[in-house]
Image (cartoon, rainbow, N blue to C red; front, side, top):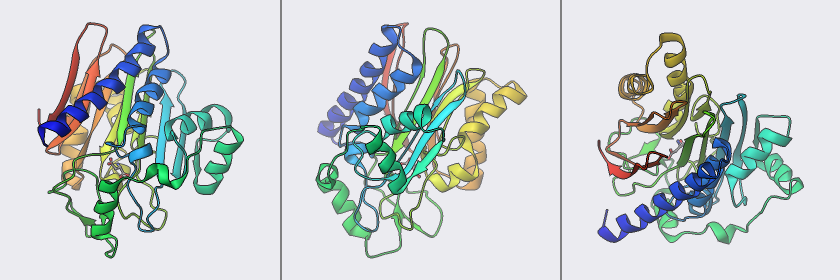
Length: 301
Ligand code: ASP
């Protein structure tokens, strides 16, 4: 990454951390902090979510997102939705007001309009870099992860050595020990057939439970779905008594690697312990807490 780009990413990550932290400092909920942080990333074209979402095979931007409240296990998600400015806000609406957990496609868009959500035209999502990324592979049947992907496996996935920008997610622990997790993404470049990744699927890419942890994942979604990654971390803590870090290591650095799934996750528990865990070369990540610690990092640990 060039120095200039690193400055931009650092600013983007710090802005998201600050937006989330401000909510928590003002005694807001973990849930609202997650929404605030993710909206900041969705509005930033550098990230593959909201404004910066990648292009599908048909040249569209179809977004997936989910949110979960660890205090009551309420959850909401949307999949394959277009023209919604902040997918994470729509996921929260689904959780609070739809009576359902996961809405998709035109039905989810109809729900968004009914709820008075901000809708944006296709042009809002145009991004030259994402477009060029798509043009390179649109005449193939490859999909491409918006990550550095030298070690990706699976016939339908093209390696992506140049681009390192991915899905966004946030996890938070508030002053009451309540946890929340959220994830938002454009998915994979050149995806087709209404492909849905792990991000909007509760238990796969997103999960929160006050008794264990809050998790948001990024990586090759098909593997994260098969490994039910976020819930597996929670289960290892609940059933086996592992610590947050131990559980993340087992799932990401052992089980996922054996399956061939590249990616990682961010995690926090109700004591405020946090972990960044990934089996890829790097993962853009950040943390801010009330002890005054602040971290922004990109490459391997
Ligand atoms: N997990 C996302 C998906 O498969 C992609 C990503 O994390 O960048 O849709």
